[in-house]
Length: 371
Ligand SMILES: Cc1ncc(COP(=O)(O)O)c(C=O)c1O
Image (cartoon, rainbow, N blue to C red):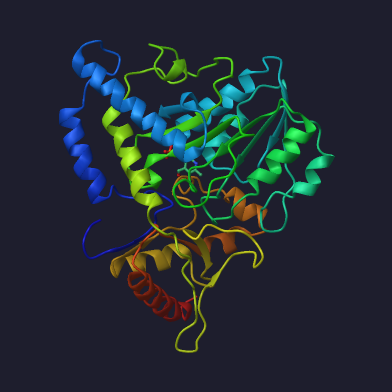
């Protein structure tokens, strides 16, 4: 991490940590062989790849063969949706989450008319209303995110999966795990068909990710090529990046993701977290209500103090429309603009967080006078 800054936008991406970078630099030079070749260097690379696959399978609690490496979350979600829907060439019913990341919402939008896309009911804070699922038509495919990237809400994946399987034991369930992997105890993989993950959210480089994809699925890949990764993600396997992912996973799982308490100080008013008091949230992501100050204005003032945090989702900030989770929790465009996203990395120094919080509150109190 660059010296002298406080980085609070880990939900967007986490810079590669020093330990991972050091190993990666060595691997790029010493292990950059093609895992498909038959000479000794390639066989060594192949063995190293097998070890990585076993490590990820062990972490996820799935079969080794089920682990597929890809370039990241967007690719995994696209392949995953294709895999689930590809099992039913004649189409069917898809239970959709209204609050997924664009990398999942986008491909769902492009499904053809043979698919009936049914939104799952949500409560006032965006969590899927599990009891309400019984009212929906029987699902063939279910898609949802585990941890929401903008507000940190943790969806009740196990309960949703149980309800879907009870309705249809053959259902395919795709869960986007990008924001929870390495940071929270995992949902149960047993009833999931696909579970996707991303390297750059855990301090591995951007460009590596993957998924658990049930080996029993009929092959319906998005791209065709040399058959690598069981044919689901053809292309030369980026072994050094995969090893970096595994190093990052080992590193992050040894750290504790402690929630930061957004307490008052000096007895004054402070920005409030936008959270259901009884809900389940990632300790790494908190949306703060900074009204009447616009989030972007506060963001730039903090930047001058060397503190970097997000406003909503980095991935959707290029689009000016209201984010789906902001909409789901009843925010209008103005309320949505008056938010900042504070997102941390497990093990981040509590003193650093406390200092950043004090600066944020001070800046906010000063800026309030101008709004
Ligand atoms: C929940 C979620 N899913 C998927 C992605 C996409 O991952 P990638 O940027 O690796 O394509 C992100 C990244 O922001 C995310 O937060």
